[in-house]
Length: 209
Image (cartoon, rainbow, N blue to C red; front, side):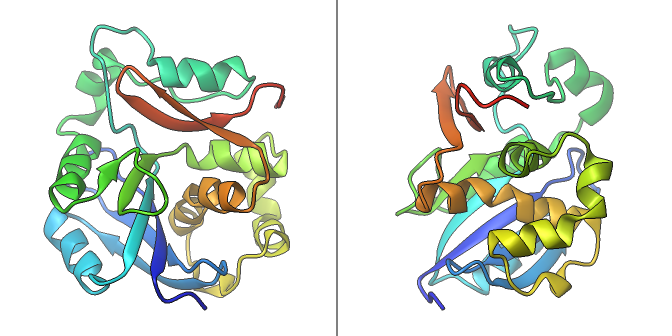
């Protein structure tokens, strides 16, 4: 088991005050622990318990927004490959998600030395679309379909200690980490969209939902 890196997936509550869930996975795909937090102090305590270990953090929530756009360009890139994605824009943000958690968590992690859209060899954080990852990797078209067979699918992929996952939020947190493991194993299913301040793992062109 690797001792120098932990891959963290976070199913982030989009609104301040609601519970977020996370999972820590070693490079051999072994789930080490799950965790939850309501605020940045609790998240900090969790990270501090592994301070000396390199973290790559994958978060299921928008981490950047150009308020002049009707749809984020990274979301359009995902949809152009045939995969549905929840739109996120200024109007929806104001109507449903203020005070918003994603930007706060990004700023907090950056203040701790995590680089937004960095590389896997440094402390870094990335935005991902958790269920979108499952659609791309497993060819799943509905969340209901995935949940009927999630344990077998994740086990066949190689994940271990799946019994630690107790709810759908923790499953989503694990799905957040899929781009790391597909990229480091050169599966060739994702590409990193980096443009106009956005950073999102999206399906490679030619991959149809």
